Length: 110
Image (cartoon, rainbow, N blue to C red; front, side, top):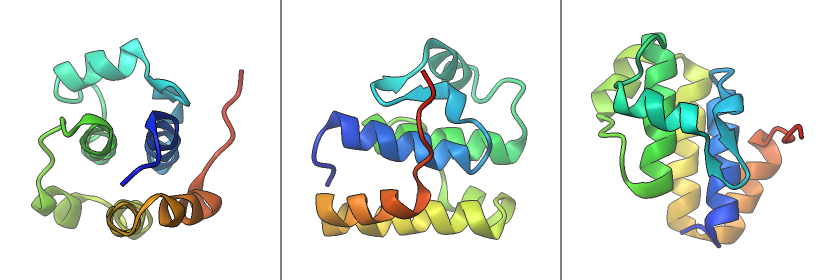
């Protein structure tokens, strides 16, 4: 599991960076635009971007209704690896998530 909400938010932001969507998440959580896109089932996002957004919400609060088949059928290797390896890290605990973050995290710009 995640250590706290900040670690979870950092992981979601890092995951979104795989689709160049990290602007949709802060270290405090999803932006209003991210919530709007979720409510619009991705709206104007590409299918790959939509899947990454749904994955971020799945990690954040269990929302997003992401199907494994979508990851397999649509995502390229790098974002697929990031999603799957984050699943494993979360199952292993907060220290494993920190290790995952050390590989995938992008700095938040203020």
